[in-house]
Image (cartoon, rainbow over all chains, first blue to last red; front, side, top):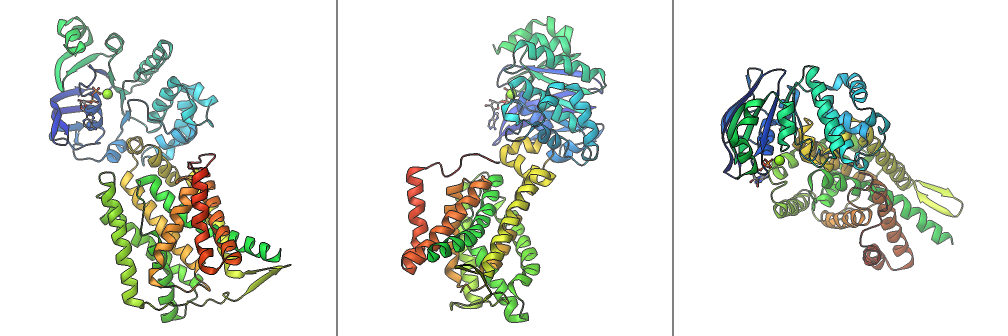
Length: 234
Length: 288
Ligand SMILES: Nc1ncnc2c1ncn2[C@@H]1O[C@H](COP(=O)(O)OP(=O)(O)O)[C@@H](O)[C@H]1O
Ligand SMILES: [Mg+2]
């Protein structure tokens, strides 16, 4: 479904990702692990089209999307839940969800998708009229995921969804991720939380200083002695 | 007492239009961080376009709106897309310089075409008066008040309850996140700038009847607008409209109780005073 070929991306001409290749098959949860500053957010933003790559290709469902704008990528179903959630703080939960479904493909079905999202997150239903900035971190993460579902994601990319959440909320969010996977969604899960990710993803990539250091089935990556080393950034 | 009420009425009526001017500037600032120093010169442009349409076709300024609003909206869109967009987000000072340059170009362009003599654009309602007890108000001022508040309320509803309005607020609150929703941020910024200039075309016609115009007046409107947004808060609707009323009132009281020239200075004096005691502006609630 997603193929990244020899991607090089950077800021101001200085590469941060060096020759990154990865694939994700339809219906998979793929984990992308890496220490702080490994380049995970840079990668997910490249997949969302936020910057033009210096070289390399990105293909989605057989089409080359490398030159597509962020808007076009949203319209074909590549949806990101950003690091830090980035909900619109001075807008209500409802308005945030409506904005999630603002793209041309999803717009017409918003009432139906909103019902689905609110059924998935009853907490959001109770807080529909409340400003997103007043929600707790866990609730904001629910909102950020709900917003992405409103966009009718085909590929859902989550950037550190457990960041800053209490263990209880982390359990809850990962439960939701499993449920979405069971419903058939393809998921790219970016995390620093090693054990959690290895447990929920079928395959994993470990990113180390902008390069893919290790890849394979989660069990294999888990037992690879290099994983913990790369992970600690040693 | 009659004088006092008279000034009150006039200040409130004109102040509403100042509020409208500032709403346009605040919206543009909110989505793109551009402070447009050619704001007042676009008002001039709107007024002189009305004058031209009057000279050529004897059109009333209120009728000319049908032409000036779309025309200036398009001009605004083109200016943002080709001139400002390449700089926005990278070079704040360049943006300031560009809008200052634009101000000079507009001012001198108008001077070239219309000459430097003060001019008037008549309107059928120009000399019509409305008498309410001791207070006599000019009909154009009443029209300005009604239209300005209707526009402000319309804008507010648009921002709250349409997809375009929500896109504007999303870009204001977090442009990166807005882009991830599939919102074309540059497009929203361009349309908002175009909308802001279109609003100026309306404000220009509202302020025009009975007011002599001359090419160098733009700066005065820019300064008034800047003061209003500084008072109200760049993105606070209620604050901005209130700021407009305060500036309108201080101008009206200044002209009645002080001399004409001193009166024109009163808004600036009031502004300095408010900034001394409430540097955060009048804002008490943010309504982004
Ligand atoms: N907007 C930016 N401009 C310049 N450098 C950046 C920017 N964002 C990230 N970087 C740099 O790119 C590297 C990778 O960052 P990032 O992709 O955020 O890593 P991660 O998400 O894995 O923590 C870091 O060295 C960071 O300093
Ligand atoms: Mg990151």
